[in-house]
Image (cartoon, rainbow, N blue to C red; front, top):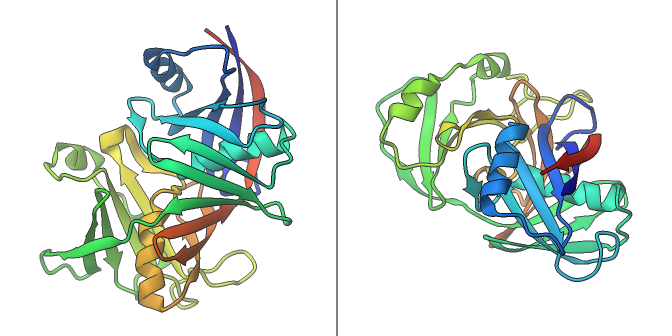
Length: 281
């Protein structure tokens, strides 16, 4: 069996940045075992490999698709950047002209729209952090918050500089050995001109972050859509804004625009399709 596959950099308009994902287009006439999908994800060795199948119609004309996401070690319930990558392939490679497509997933129905300016907009459930955690008195930490979805949000003080933020090197081995009942840890700080949190055009980011999830086989994720269902909710409340502009400050990095609307968030970004081919199984 030959499976059409694409490598897509999500949340960027430049190759070799953003978060790469492998997108596999699975014909509805074919059946892939869970084990096979996990093997393919391990073989690709990217943070996420996504499998997409039209539920009715073809890749070009369907509006409803099944979607599943796999890290190299496990299947996950939600992945923003791989969803954006999958939509980019459908819109820009398969010629799907639908204004919006819906993905059926383990997290429910996810609606993805294509904007006139080439942005892809993801409609995801909001996951605001629910409670503030108690921590020792650390000079760099403003506060720590735990979300119901298992993400720990660690806010650093506003005076921390972006260059120092990007240079932080958490001990991943210690994180894995810890008994913390979380799926990921996000470090975040408010963006200001004074701390260097500006984009190439000089626009200030509302906030920046980094996201670590070694328990899922990913030390640091380059750009994480699902993390921004947590962090954007937090910062929208803190800044009294409904729309926030964010940067994930990994080595590759990426920019996201997030609108918070009650129990939903819309995450927008761009994508670059770098490679296409056939995966033979």
